Length: 154
Length: 414
Image (cartoon, rainbow over all chains, first blue to last red):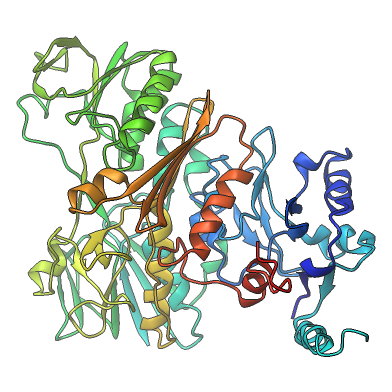
């Protein structure tokens, strides 16, 4: 099974390094408007939640694409867009239940491609709010996290 | 197991994909036309010359195998669900274990005098689009302002011709837009030079051996080309003749597994009439992603793999030249017509505009105009709709994600 990106909003500090490095890796500029991961912030409640593509199994973006430009990379499991086929109708952005398909200021569709299997945002996340785990480990890490709530001192 | 799919559209091809997921199946896809598998959604872009023909035609390299066969150019004359046979006008019948009907829809042209003159077109098939491209014209009239009508008008205007868009109702896009949004969309189109006539219906098309003028109840319009975008009709004749139950809109009635009233016969895409997510009635859903999703579900069920198609809302995007327009769910007008009392909330300033429709305090529809292509706001609103049930654009949520969004932040809910 391919690994997946897991976010843990409870430890996210909202530093937005992930956004910056994402645009830097893909476009060579530090411009969060071109990032494929975004941190949503609720100022009053003091909550930051990183949101990115979850690489759905039956992906609505793939279903809604009228030119079949979206396909799954068999190696990484990422939903990738073939630029030469995309007509920029943005149906995938509308169809995505999580809003994780973004559109750049030029209209280009941005979706997490897992950096070809080695996501840079994960490496730079100081608080481990973004992790890249195989699904088997994912359940354990969630369980561990939940169990920790019984003993806040751990 | 032998599964026969009738129809080479997106629903038919998606059904073949779904059926081939079971390695024990053999699939035959039958299509009366000789046209390749193409994307009907991008035809306006092809007409305007934004994309070449190669990009309209869709490839399917992964599916060529000994388990999959395509038969083109032989029209099905009848189906026999009891004998499990498909009959052709010429040639021997083909027997099946499961049948998937994906016959799609056809354009509906009202019986107006002169509507059969050369120069009258519809925009539904690749053939239509090619013929429009080959037709030389200076001024065009598009009749009907649904999504196809609007996109056709934009495509013809992009070619630099004079374009008039005629709509019989009081606003453009009457099924997808509410008056406040339709007004803005209309302004956007008029700025680009499209002449729009609402509350105007076509009486007659004049011409000697080709279209010359279009006569409406208000004026006479000079036109070399007329595009009829006045609606679609499901192509359900085969099913009707075979005694399969049809719905109120002449589509084929299906259940959640996309099975029709005949055992082992499935219907998908434009031709299928599927239950509405909010109201107890069936509706036709002439959208691309319905074809993809329903096709896959029917294919999997036919092949013996269990699957269900979740209740799904209508949804679409259009680019009014540089202005993206998107809509999801129900319109205020539609709810009013059902005798309900929806509430609306309009937000936005200048170019950017959102129109939300609430029913009993729940978001059930949204229409948006947003010039910056910065779709964070779209997604937040659509997202909210996913979480604020009952109306979900897609019928699933991922538990992990839901937990993250709904809090568990020690009472500090977002």
